[in-house]
Length: 231
Image (cartoon, rainbow, N blue to C red):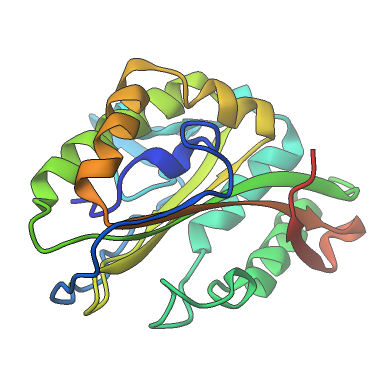
């Protein structure tokens, strides 16, 4: 069950780069959920080659349809199934130090070689949602909102990866999304499920902050860079 609200799915649901603070509270720690990272989905004994599990949700409405993407985005989405958190303090750590981006880039390089695809420098859109919840927040309520918003965002297209952690002892957490581009993120955040999630934010969190970043995979997928997003 998700313990972070769905507002990170699109950056424009809440005022950009805004931080809101109410009361300081603490919450017991929860083990980080393990995301399913299979690159193929089994349906009635048949492999659905075009569908990828890219989030902790593995039901059909949450699967990424690879046939809707160009080759570069397909390769990144596949590589991101191997995204791993490297730090226990991910809720507050610098974003570039939280995940195994070098391994993801190496995976892109291998996939590109296997596909006989020449990788040219390409950028992608990242949304980061840092939050803090009070003990009064019910995780089940967060889970319902989050799952509905994720399905809605997936349907809109271009949603390549969704990862969320669990609150630390002080109730702090992090969720992050990788999108094909900023336009997709905006379209994915204007539906009814996202409006409900955004409306609930002030009641379910004591703090929240949104960061918008640019992921750049260099020529040949030989290196990566993450910078602040500038319109």
